[in-house]
Amino acid sequence: MKEYLKYCQEDDKLTNRPYTTRYIGSLVADFHRNLIRGGIYIYAGTLKNPAGKLRLLYECNPISFLAEQAGGKASDGFHRILEVEPYTLHQRIPFFVGSTKMVEKAEYFMNKFSKNFCELS
Image 1 (tube, one colour):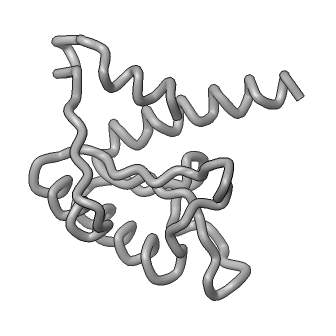
Image 2 (cartoon, rainbow, N blue to C red; image 1 turned 30 degrees about the horizontal axis):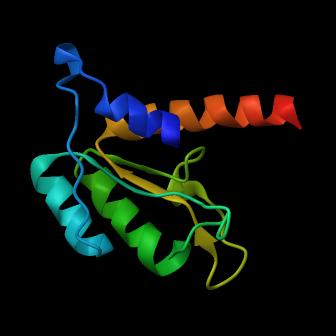
């Protein structure tokens, strides 16, 4: 995750970077702003909450549906959110939603990290 954030802060005129960050503190408000202005909403897993904090069925799925209808993408960092099979009612999941390009770049960094992590363990 840190590598993706560093990437977003690098200066690159071809991709209009560096990107600015904004955090309102509400999933719906942050997502609404990203729909209007572009961007990505990230709530990744942490050491304390490796499964993330947002709930799949009644937070991530509805926002994912809206994002995809608007031409964006939603992911847990590895899989499309709307394809994740829930196993409990209150299942939590990491969440990346926004522009297709930005979500795919975040997935690229997540896959890169997970491969490096697997090699270390």
